Image (cartoon, rainbow, N blue to C red; front, top):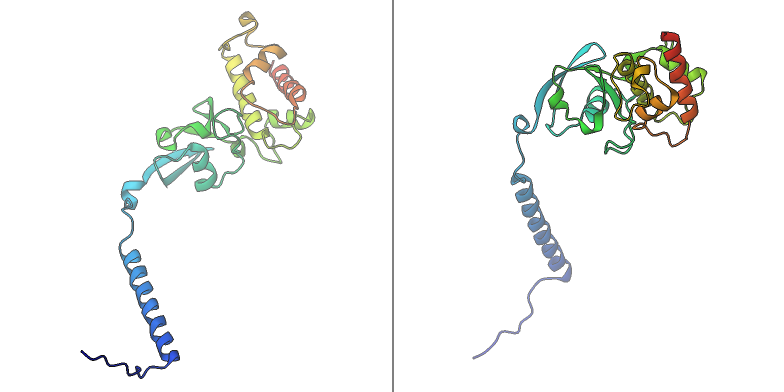
Amino acid sequence: MTHDHRPLDVTRREFNKGAGLGIAASASIGWMTFVQTPASAETPSESTAKIELNVNGEARELMVDPRTSLLDALREHIGLTGTKKGCDHGQCGACTVIVDGRRMNSCLSLAVMLTGSEILTIEGLGRPEDLHPMQAAFVERDGFQCGYCTPGQILSAVATLEEIAAGIPSSVATDVTALPAASAEEIRERMSGNLCRCAAYPNIIAAILDVQEKRG
């Protein structure tokens, strides 16, 4: 048996060019396969929900993932960034808003569960030229330093005074008979879910007491 050992009539440049084209073709086929066969994702109609929220007196219609928190709906979908994202675990109170008259940690609440609810954020409480009494008191008493927790502190304070005025005792009310007024100790307990890393607590309590006193 004989073997033909004659060299192929192919130059090194031609060989490299052919190999390169082969690799490119393989890569293109692989990329086309990847593009044409995406992972099994849900269609938009299956992955989103249509909800309507009444935010600061204005009806807002949104399409959101059912897992979207109220906090993310407010910040990312509506653009109301006054509500702050702190711990995102309901432990700091920076995301506090008022829903149907009651304060709530918006990071722990699903937006889809609040369809039709009346939601109040810091943007709807007052304006720079017409501050809410609680906002004015925080400024007067210097109840903030960095200001990050302040929107949640103010909304929680507003709701706290409404709870006190309605005669709703806290879990460890110091003197229920004193309602609808409350001591600094009682207010401190009611506000314990709102953390201030700058430790402006004495001024925050003083501001709340000022508003309570003016309300009579």
